[in-house]
Image 1 (cartoon, rainbow, N blue to C red):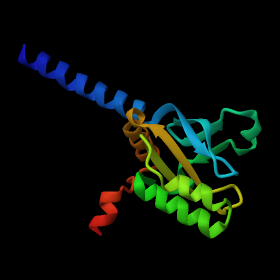
Image 2 (image 1 turned 90 degrees about the vertical axis):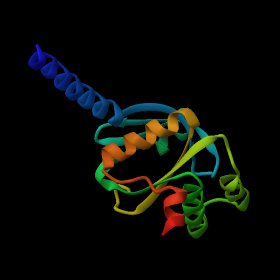
Image 3 (image 1 turned 120 degrees about the vertical axis):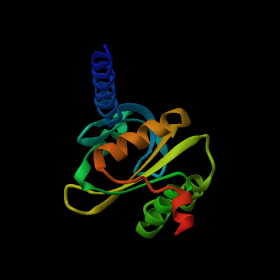
Length: 160
């Protein structure tokens, strides 16, 4: 009796762990992403276990749709730290107006993610994503799962 109960518990834990890991790396979330004009527009962020996919809702921005292989992702930041990293990156690249930079620094009721990656021409690129707070932890877990990297938070930077 004890042996069968032990076997049932161990197999349940194993199944739960396997399903949790699989769920964590597969996610589809409605979000807002930074477009080429410095505005946040509706998009969908997908992780399928190997890649991060960003699909813009509007056909006007379909040329910005991106599929990023997990191995090409160099750095993931979240929260205020991601706003600063993206703001610095954009300011250095002189891609948008100062009004857009001000918008990046404002506080919102959303979690923000900054993702640095190498594009198909091996140039450093950046994706900036806003998700509702209730999806922030799930996206963080999925990104960590597919890349094997820790997500840099404001608190971890302040401790260094």
